Figure 1: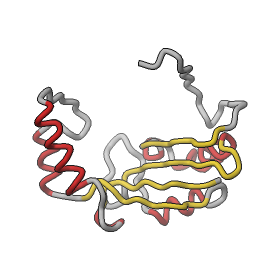
Figure 2: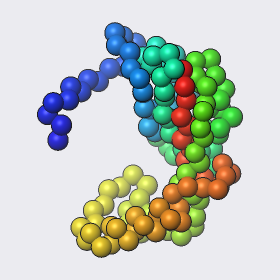
Figure 3: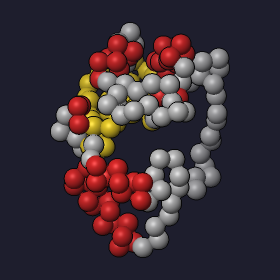
Figure 4: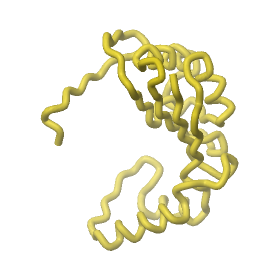
Length: 153
């Protein structure tokens, strides 16, 4: 879809990238990493971000039970501890509000790692509006299933 973009896959723990970026994103990655590798991974990301640059990171929150293919989930305190040597957290956004209704809907639609397709624009738009209005943002960290942080180098 983006023929003019150059995509590159690199192991940040053992690889080396000779570029610096204004912003790095780490969307739902840390939970898949061995706890022994996370500090090195964060340090390598810090090496890629310019001074005063940003890291945007999301992870599942600790209130959720850890899935089989994940090592761990995180709280804001955990993230502050991990990121503090290289980044300052400037914003924390608890999101994906916990809800029995939302969990039941996910299961009914094939959630938890299975894919599904809804072709009706009306149904897709209606579900998105309901999710956005009622479930996207949580009122507190204790009531979220995921957490996002914006950090500055």
